[in-house]
Length: 150
Image 1: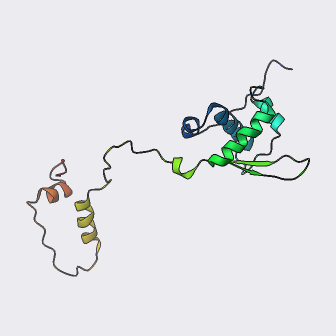
Image 2: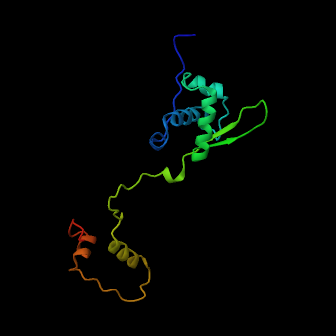
Image 3: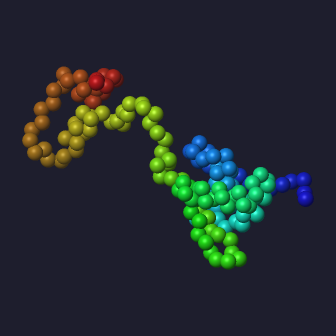
């Protein structure tokens, strides 16, 4: 063996590590290294064990893969006797986005600004629009003040 070893790494979502047990996250991220940019990976259980440095035996890896399938983190396709299975790592859709953690949601654009912008968008006004230039929101909208009124 040479003194330089090939290092295998991958990027894994933090949600995988936070929502899976130690063995599950090890196997799942290891499978990502096999999958790479492909849709599927097809390593043998022995190859997975070797890549994990022998920390998990093939029998345990098989059990973990079944757990990952039940939790919706992996899809396994059997290819038949004497052939390795196809595996696809999946991140469940409900974990793709970060939770709000109870913070109040703020719209990107205030509602009043949207209403005015939509009314100005029409090429031919259906009715005459009177704008009150003393309204604090209108002053903010046209740039006379920097603070948006609540």
